[in-house]
Length: 112
Image (cartoon, rainbow, N blue to C red; front, side, top):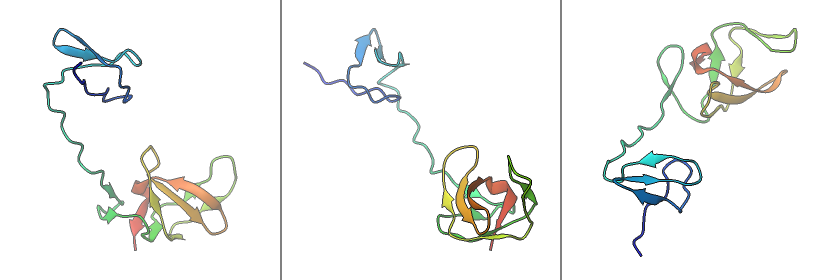
């Protein structure tokens, strides 16, 4: 019995060959095992000025941000300490004093 690689999308181990392609029965993904998949470049998060952000950095806001579902506004210049970078629409997970935990977009902050 030959060992076939698992599905690159759902990592299911029950892929089967169909001609030159391998097919995953769980998610329906089809791929050519001979093709080399391009390695994903490490995600780089940048602030409004183009500086590279890292986990644990301290940033300040460059724009007043309205908080959805509230009348409160986080003012420009508010310092946010110990950020955590995440994948998604909002790249920064943080806790702002007086407002609590929230997520920010990296385009609205600058590195201190």
